[in-house]
Length: 236
Image (cartoon, rainbow, N blue to C red; front, top):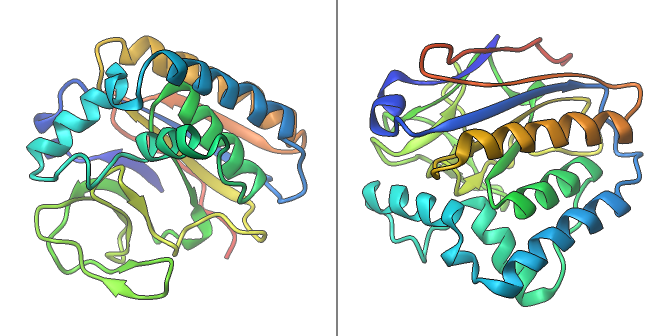
């Protein structure tokens, strides 16, 4: 079982720098308040001097969304959506300790970070172009079919676990109280993406084991020449 980006995605976005992290041993019983506050504070400090749309990390994603034919102010990458909410409401949503931590890290770095419950993923997971036949489960319980050529996270059962690349995840593999094994994916496109991704992944590799001491984790940056991240199937 592995996670990867298709060759077509690497061709379209050669500047892409993905980071992936596998964690086993997650639970909903963890205290991450201080970490969330610290990373949220970093994000708030950046917003105090610049709007989220002016950050280089977000500008890069807006450019890619435009190339995909999406209006960037209608469809925002997940990091921009979090920063916008933080600017307007003064806090990030609280959902699950791991999601809360990853959202705060995402906001601090202005880089989209997705978390997938691997027990809901069938076979390999790949960022690729949709055929139009995949199934996407919304948080309201509806089933959608991504547009053909839309960039999605897809598994081998044609489940779309995210639509419009980094815009929105599916409820199918959303982290819940029963989640124990996850894949965390961060993706960046801006000029200093490699250095920033190394720092982001290092932060997660420090913070996640600190909050879940019994968990096991591994992570690395992916490249076009080494695009696969090996995973261990989650118990079902």
